[in-house]
Length: 557
Image (cartoon, rainbow, N blue to C red; front, side):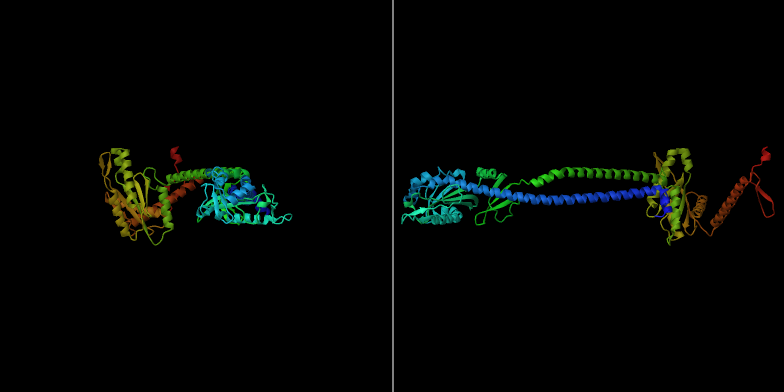
């Protein structure tokens, strides 16, 4: 930057506004910079929040997976507990003989009846023969029909097949004693030394825990290499049983519900499958979501501060807007007071002249009229009925003028006292202006009611046609005033349009010459004052003195 321009800026030469312009420019730039900085910070904060939220979602997804695995382990542990609870009922030679050989119903009822498997706990059992025939049902304490046992048998069929296969593989010939068999249980780390299996299943639309245990003899002479009789234990996953699973898995508010059919799955649920991978139930619980909770606890104060800042900024913007609005209203009120008459609300003399000058400067092919109006004998009304009556007449005239002729581009005005004026809408000819003038005189010249009295009112009006009757505001007003003088001379309630080819023009020229002479006299008087009090004179062509413009100091002496 050149040194001269730099010094010019430092000294305040910044445009026509000087230091004020520099201050406004600096303030504007600062506001823009602050806005950009705030937007950048908000964008960075938003990007950071999104990134942190995605990380929290990914971390919580791992937590959800661990919790689901814990629930599955809890269900598996519940199956092991169920096998351990029913194993004493089925393990032994007596049990094998009673069930497989004798099928002693009283004994079955005492060992596997409703007293052992109470129906109100959501648990029941079925004893199934090697040929697939149900021998006993704890719920009825009697052998069930195939149809009655079908829901359980269908759900437990894969488990029954696995248990029988393991049993057949576990019964092996005894090498020490031909013709006899020995039982070699698999070393699986199970809770009990028995042949059993458990899994999730669905019975009559309800998720259940199924446990199948082989009823096996202990003594080798009773062992056979054939399918064993099995006990099917069914436990509904409801109530306290599910609550125990939740405590074991260390999850809150665990629920296990059926898999929905034909409706969207619960978004908070996770599907539990059986050993074959088929959906068996839906687990719903309150997620721990530690990452989201930590993020929410960290972000909440920042969000609160941002909200407070936003509220403060909004309140400040509202306050600034309200102040600006009030200042605007005050400015509008001041401007209106400067342009309008306080008593009538019409435009005042200054605003009227300004509008007239603007119309003349922007004159187009559409001429218009300028009308000067006098209320006849308004002073007499003030003297006889009082100032309030005169004000009532003036206000009524103003109201009639505004209502009848104040639309469009027209401008009614009060020039002072009993003097009113009007810039009309476009008037194509003098005749059209004369018609408008007659309508105006008739509309304004009607009686005015004041405190029960009817005050007769007439007006006189003179009009000039623009721009034909003058190129300047003073010429237009002078010609309109000449027309007004002729209207008043013709009598009350008259309206006259200036005529440039009649005596109005001669009078206008005389007035213009008088104005020129008066201007010359004022110029000579001003020159005499500069000469220290000499006696300036205005002489005619014959060098005759016709006017002495300075005081006669000798006479005063």
